[in-house]
Image 1 (tube, rainbow, N blue to C red):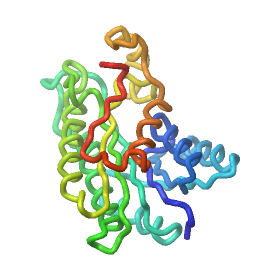
Image 2: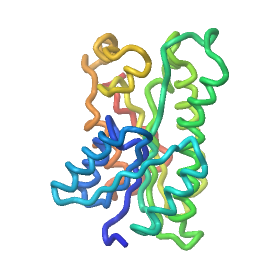
Image 3: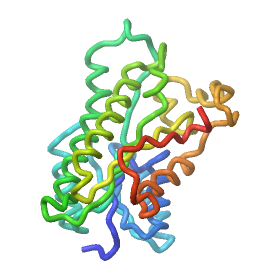
Length: 250
């Protein structure tokens, strides 16, 4: 069992998730993070963290599957003990298109990863953290997107809608468990340089749209990770149900 606080980060092998894993390790967490298929990327993250004298483990899991999530939490329980922090970061989007060309299968893929998966992970975290259930409390941070505000017209309104749902869930769960020692917040990243944009069919999207940002630049994954770790920390002890924009003023 770990003597350090244990954090679970979903989708931690790249982008914002990987930056959060690095930052959490530096803050003294025992880091558990999931990956779906990028085993080489996951190995690089764990290798770099352990080389710095910190503890990290990569666990293959599919947040679209309740069975996979249950097995994930059981594995962490057995190896490290109950988690004290959860970052719901795993997400997906698909090729940019209008709603009138989307099919239901695509929408189901988006929502199963971006909202049902985080809800199931949060459920398992609450079952372990809640003082009502004998836990010691904890913190949850959900990673939303500026798309929840803009709606991403002509690009991926399904992704935007899933992130809007995640924000609503954040507020509702925060109020539901506020008396049980659990804080629940979200970050809302703007245009961040990650590989996610390539999945939408436009790898250079941030450079195209950065002029829309008051700070006139895209953000880096580490800048989002900094906000996530602040929300997890005792410095944010009176913050719950908040949606923190990390978007350069947009």
